[in-house]
Image (spheres, rainbow, N blue to C red):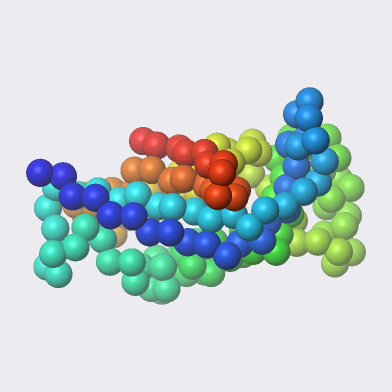
Length: 153
């Protein structure tokens, strides 16, 4: 039997642009994005859970010396998230230095890219912390209540 649970993390005001789009998405714009994390396990833990959502604030699970919750806020709350390949990146770096924006970069930008980026970082943490009992296998990124993209292992 496979058990599954999901955790919705929302409330991130994020600004971005898809610099190589042939639409209005090439302009700087923002959404209140949400992340839906999907976990699964064949064996439940001692509390009969797939995964304890308290890990978000647990100091044993850190990314760049931040709890997972703090790291997600650092990356996506009131930030400008751009592709590392954005041709205007230097201008945005200067705005960050000038204190006008909080710039974050990801290898490639799209909601799909954010989903993959977060999954690549969080999956190994969950895998290790659970001794391979539980798995974070999918992340959905919702840019509003109509659009969603996923990355799945």
